[in-house]
Image 1 (cartoon, rainbow, N blue to C red):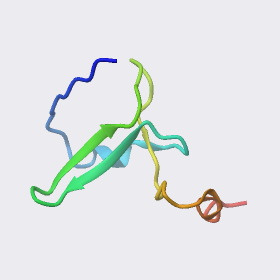
Image 2: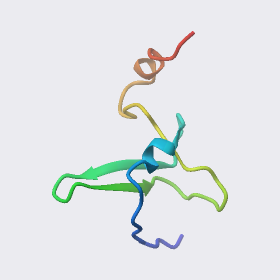
Image 3: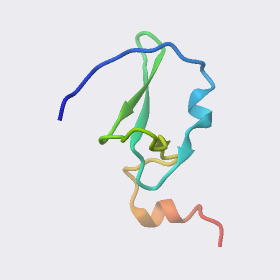
Image 4: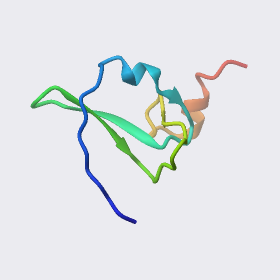
Length: 71
């Protein structure tokens, strides 16, 4: 696998447009020193594949995550 690091400027609303997945392929983090936001791939993402994030803490046990699910 070839790892390439590229940096792009983006609208701050972009993370709000990334859909949720229980098996996300990216993570959004904030750099406290610079107040920058980073979207990092957590696994390879194929061309055309949707970029997804989780809206809950993935460190929580599965049962705790499901507790907020309606139905």
